[in-house]
Image (cartoon, rainbow, N blue to C red):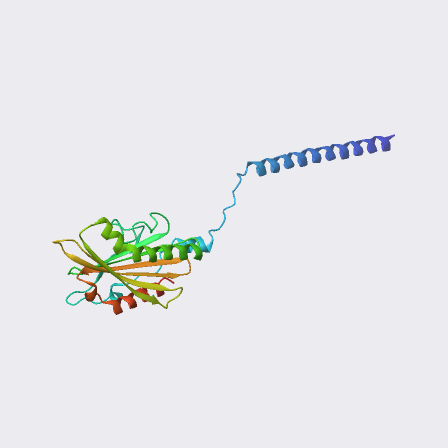
Length: 228
């Protein structure tokens, strides 16, 4: 009889211990589950692609020393600036994009010579080729277009030919003179490297005979080489 009661007490204690263990385990499980649910969801942050990071940086630009020398004055280079210049680019007003991946740099001297470089990074090489083609046509037509808009004035242009650098470059000269006003000469360089197109403009008072064509061709070649 004593043995039966002892066995009963042992079984009761075992059953109670098992029940307590089950309750504790259930409480822990609920607590862990609540903690997991309470943790805020951390959205996946994709890493910026190298191409996008590269597109945010400006391509290489000409330095003051790369421009055709002007007797009696050095060249001074402005900062490479995002976007287009405030004033329209001669002969390219309707060609260059107003927005997008575009940078420019201005150059000046102590005299009347000035220069400008504008560079555009396009989405792909095909778009760059189309932009360069449109720019070449615009510069070739520029003198005639200007004469139509300024009757009684004088204008001329010259094609200085292809330059063998990267995907190619081209140099031109334009001359404009209004009646009883000053005359100006400009040199234009257009070049492409992959999906990037650069435009170089040099100008001062004078005629096409006064333009430093050979030095400007080297300037345009240097501009394209510096795009990399």
